[in-house]
Amino acid sequence: MTETYNPMIRDLPPDERPRERLERYGADALGLSELIAILLRVGNARTSALQLAQHLIGRFGCLRGLAMASVQELSSINGIGLAKACQLKAAFELGKRLATTPDAPKVIVTAPQDAANLVMEEMRYLTEEHFRVICLDTRNQVIKIMDTSIGSLNASIVHPRETFRPAIINNAAALILLHNHPSGDPTPSKEDLSLTARLVQCGEMIGIPVFDHLIIGDGRFLSLKERGLM
Image 1 (tube, helix red, strand yellow):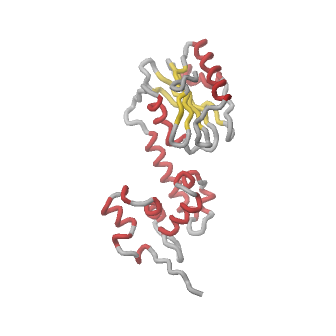
Image 2 (cartoon, rainbow, N blue to C red; image 1 turned 45 degrees about the vertical axis):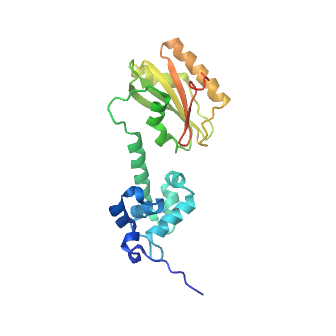
Image 3 (cartoon, rainbow, N blue to C red; image 1 turned 30 degrees about the vertical axis):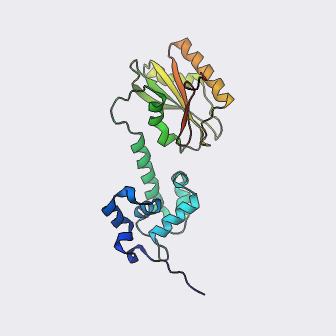
């Protein structure tokens, strides 16, 4: 029986080691498995960190699948364990927070893309439907972004009372509605359109207009206003 030789990272030439390559060429020159290997730091007695990273990508299919994996799922893999699982989850969380941190204290929403940019990197990974509102002041500056409902995989339970409560509490002049489709497809359902019409009507009654309703998919979104659906 021939035993497969699995070289450790320390056995590789210096210009093939992930950390040395990052230092020399920059992080954007590294492949996905190399970046993950740097986070893992070490493998185990039979597997290098690079091979372990490649196994993780194969196991979860893609970076999105890996980011969505729980600590329990990650730590159950041979060679990962609790410490490495927590390191990976912390790295993904930092990336999401960086992507959703505004560059300035006051963000102005002038187009649907502006609103989508505020939530995309977080909401695209959610496995349940989250319904959120962006509260705007009279200059279309963001006052607050809040969840108002968290539902199942397919639908959110949304009440007008809960939807407009953040706007009333924060003295908002207008709202933008948001919710995600865990499937990744932002195509609106009949229920989405019916709910939007109901909330627009409620906003007109209480003097807090609904400017738009965005449906967030996996790296893409749909604006009901742009599509003429509200």
